[in-house]
Image (cartoon, rainbow, N blue to C red; front, side, top):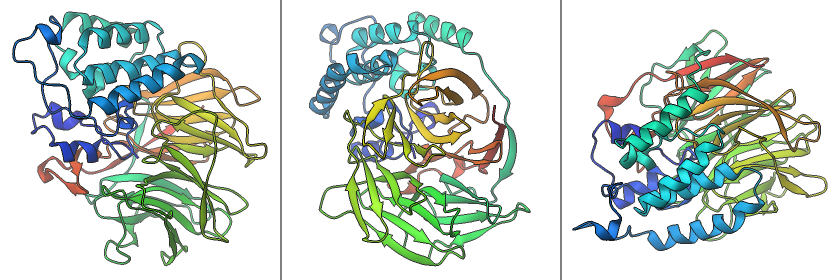
Length: 440
């Protein structure tokens, strides 16, 4: 789920978040590249482009999280030459530099990134709000929109009656032909029947749930697994039967903060979940009820979307810098090469479909939905197809679910209207729309 984007709040003129607000809203699932910089905020206006910060009279001091941000910058700079996607590292660094009000450096990095023509679109990223009125930035955006035009192919499939769900996870259960939709705000799971009827699968007041994120339905026994975590850093993996009865709730040991985000179910019964707060991927053994880390070849930055190929032992994990392929039999992991003029950065929902990765990309600026055809070994993108881009179905998409050859996805999650697990402005709430796209 997102690490909340502040796009709507800033554009609508709402009050800028307090430090605590910022920490919470950038955390959860929208994998904006700044989400991994745990404490990013927009507390003060960015430095003007025309002047260096030291030249400006009355320039505010560095952000309170400057040391942490610089540590993140150093980590990505060290890693960037080993990444197959140079644009992802450049975009990450540009956003971080702009947050530190190092605007000239940020713009230079952004220019270098956009020159690669990979699909990054900073026009929809609040990190670059301070550059929007400049001619230089406007020219960059014009070029991006020329190279990557709007794509509007989705249609509305479902809409909810409850405006304040603030949904994040969506799953499809083929055996029952129903969808499950998780709610961050109501802390429940609703069921969408084959007739379109929407009812509570797990009501808000039944089990004292945390905000619900990723959901998966087991094709074997019809049970439902879900991730949940709160702003306090508490997290749980939940297991329900097909009637919504709670079969188990599990959490990692220790006092460290964790944030279970999205998950996959293996045929063996094993559950694998991304842990966005701990920057880790965890394997859960239902028999023992224990979690163990899944090692990968490089540090992860806000791991989020996750999917399994049809062979059940090839895992794909998305973070802010791309997608890591893990062979669960050998333990070997490598970055998937997106190829030229393509990026796998900033993926929220990630899904496998007939040799392709289907992705909702929230961390590349303006969100989009794309399909990435993979090579036979699953290590390289051979064709990128943008399925939806800059349309009214890309307001704030998060996750989706595949039914046959159709991809259903949350189009307007409204996560940007949630803070401290509560809706900030009820007057801004809208009905939730689920769009559908035909997959290539």
